[in-house]
Image 1 (cartoon, rainbow, N blue to C red):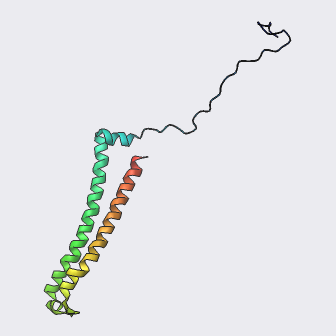
Image 2 (image 1 turned 180 degrees about the vertical axis):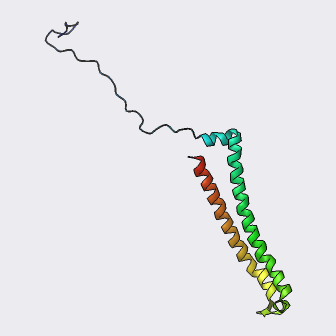
Image 3 (image 1 turned 120 degrees about the vertical axis):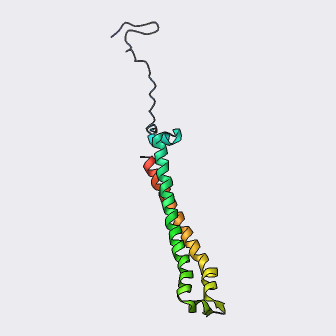
Length: 132
């Protein structure tokens, strides 16, 4: 037992000073993402990452354009090889007009949707790669 201080008797035990305990934040601090900083700083690595995304988007676009050219380019070729198809009437409308004037639009819409899905997938994969 320690000697009594002012206002304390020798019989009372000395209490330790109160200490305030604060819990630390349990969430870890966000780690800087090196690839993100490479891209925003426009370093050589960042340029390569962005160039890879651009190439993937270009490849997807060229595939869709190739499909469209193949489909729509084959129609005049078929009509040149088989001229009788040009004279076929469907509901009073010539077949080439029906195919190129009406049926082409749903096909173009479908090709646009396919491209949008591929572009979103490329961007999602790029984002996942950058966030690793």
